[in-house]
Length: 111
Length: 114
Image (cartoon, rainbow over all chains, first blue to last red; front, top):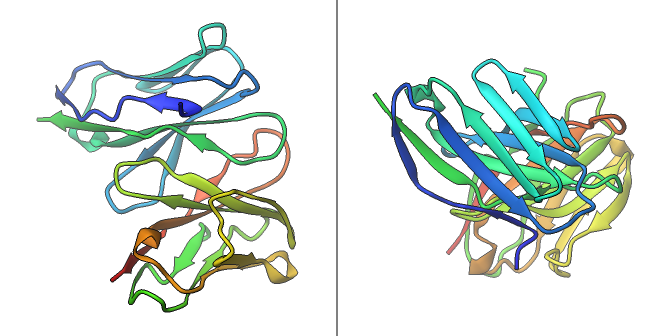
């Protein structure tokens, strides 16, 4: 079993829809949780960063962490065609800096 | 551009050849990471440096792989005797140790081993 599980999709939604992306994890030592966006043939770009449990909002994006359930989510409101990309969840513990990534969810927002 | 840069962006090689990739991190960042990403998968950690010291290596990093970061600046990743299974995107990231320690990724080097 992988440490981080993420549904690979693909996920296709109409423009303006609310998108929900999720990851589950097994390692209770994870304390830092991130969402990266990766366009085709590009490097990952950091979108959101949260520590421990709780919610964080940035514009159209909201990240949620539920450590008791070992579950993290990213919500995208009013989705745009430019949001079409692969979304990667990533996490790490307090020791060392290496990130453990999910498989990535491919999102397509149709105009 | 003051982001992470990687060269070359693409590399095609024949099985058995050696290849070397270079990563130039953001100048003030003291940590540098290498990841490998295959099609349809998330990046997998390979190794990381704090300044010039290599602090951790993944079991994925076989004896054919070696990484260096002389003088704590740029880093190179060398793959000896390449195999078709080495075909992947090799990503470099850098960060400033401490606090949130956000990792910023470069554009990657895409390797194809024929």
